[in-house]
Image (cartoon, rainbow, N blue to C red):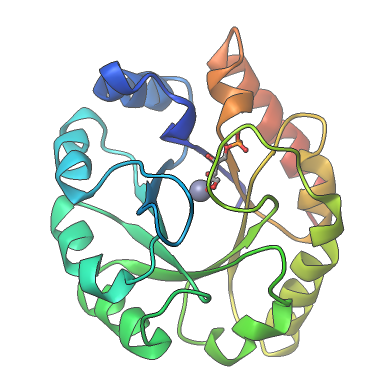
Length: 221
Ligand code: DX5
Ligand code: ZN
């Protein structure tokens, strides 16, 4: 199923709760929360206490994207804070199987992300243990960067591997997604779309979410 997950990295941080409620009203399916530690990526955003407060502003699934060096250490905090899907990076320092297990044992969906330079095959050993793969289409760290179309073959490779092994998988794309390129990502095999600047920068967020969804639905097969 196609889902749109607005990235709060581009929202007005002074009124985050209102921004979340606005996204829910505008037709968002999930809410994408970018957590950065200033170590795994050269930027710092927010931690579990903020997520806990935001939990009151929306009932949509919280799609938490951990761009941090030690995900295993912080997973329990994000579970308690109300996360639903927890994505961590295969390039991070924590043990991958242990982190997946901690997320699943906490009742959340575990997901693995790969940075642009990491090959698709890096996630193949984990496909039967996770619910989603996130293929980054920018170097993680900042919103508003350009979409890397050369990541599309990786999405297709993962989609084909899942089909071959009969694994049901969500494939998420994150970075530079807009109404200009969402079709390319959907036709490559992605079905969950993160968009920050495209949605928060739009005059009419509801219209933008609808356009993104329609385009993705048409292009995804
Ligand atoms: C980048 C983050 C993305 C980012 C997307 O490191 O993971 O979620 O906020 O923002 P846009 O859509 O503006 O590239
Ligand atoms: Zn993200």
